[in-house]
Image 1 (cartoon, one colour):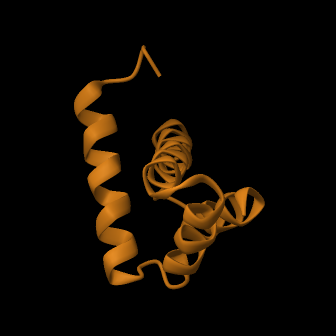
Image 2 (cartoon, helix red, strand yellow; image 1 turned 180 degrees about the horizontal axis):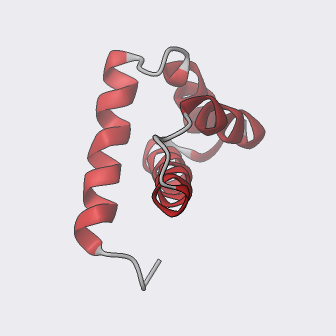
Image 3 (cartoon, one colour; image 1 turned 180 degrees about the vertical axis):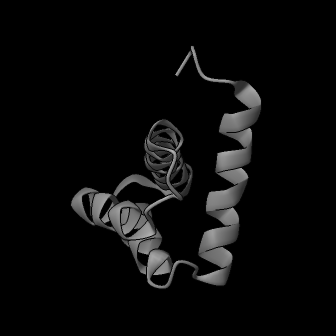
Length: 79
């Protein structure tokens, strides 16, 4: 994480909070609740943020739009 842009990390963290609040992509709130029960709220947000950053990096490298179905699959593996 030390090589990542801190603004990108903060932005991704805020995005996770917004995604959970709006349940978009649909079902993400359930993943968050499951992770929060296991690891606590803050750690759940950090885990989700890291997965989101991975998906965004893959998207950037491929030149495609972010694959939110892959994002949800990666979250599912954490739960």
